[in-house]
Length: 191
Image (cartoon, rainbow, N blue to C red):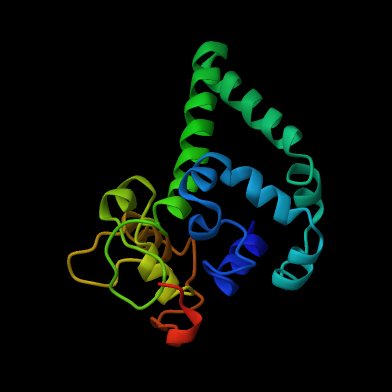
């Protein structure tokens, strides 16, 4: 997933972007984003080029290369903790929410909203509320290494509150604390 995301940043909304609604259409990205991700992640070249700093460990190879094993473990844990009916319902709600919202970040985040920075993505505060800040997609493309996606006073990034809490509890560390804006040349942008 990291490699596909990094490739998306390298080729945002131009040929080579694995899930651009500008190139592939809004509904194709919204409805098949998981398939688009998986196709690029399995091509071998993308991971080698864009995630060579993150070699897969044994757990990655077991759970992520064979997705149904990880899915089965998660489903069994939910059913064990909540009972089989509520566990199946929780799994279904999570799967639909995860797939639909992940796709929305790409489809909506590159099609509609407001722009604060000169890139092809858009900010949608309503989407940020339901995706833990990811709807502030224009900001994410402007400062891709930032853990904080709310960059203007009226923007709200719910995940940033959790990140700050985890850092203060010493459960996490921030690799970068300064906001580094990426400068895009006008010729590298399509819109």
